[in-house]
Length: 301
Image (cartoon, one colour):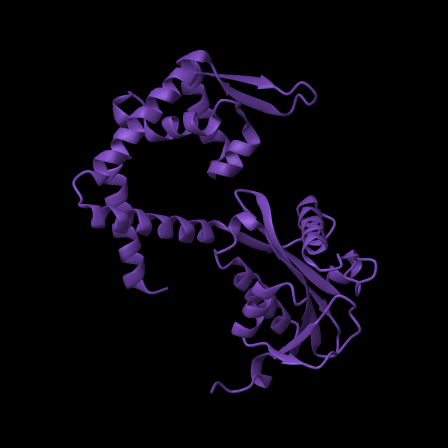
């Protein structure tokens, strides 16, 4: 990793934490640190399951418990077991907690305005646009990609979403029973693999390989959730699939796609895939692509 870039990230972190008051034990002059204030905001009007809070905020159970206990001692939070599953616990704001959250919202608005106020209109627009870009890139850095059993609930969620989206997008719908198969056993090592991308513990994308055993493999089940599109996740998934394929001595990757998936076609072409004549009889495909990997890759122009 470039040490210069690392230092710039650290400098940015120091500036931001100082400017937003994260170093103050009485965040926004409310007598509690930022962690507790953030938790009040995350709970919202409807409350949240503790396991969802842990995942969303990236907190370990011990630290979350300490934060919640402090808020509960102040009469701001209650913690109750789920009515149907006693192992599931939900935190909710009390009336005093809701009032405190509203006051924190008001003070947070004022604090944000104090950042913008000293700037002229052009600087304000530049700052807000830069913050939007930083937020997108930080979200992209928080997405995790890992091989996953196709039978896992996260994998099931992604494949169902993939099928539903194709059915709604293709001119004549999509029926996976008519498509070339990508069954669980075909996406399980050693026959293949399925990658699932998660953000805050929620599945937001997938991609798969069918390994042919003859130096070729097929890319299947490429899907990215709408809420994370624009973060470069499709390219990351494709790059990870190529890396896994190369580790299995795959020399040629192939894929097919429908003409309605214009974004996917742009991605494949920009990633070095070249369009070739049809190499299978996939009924939902209009374009077929392939890419050579490793020493078999074509030299750059």
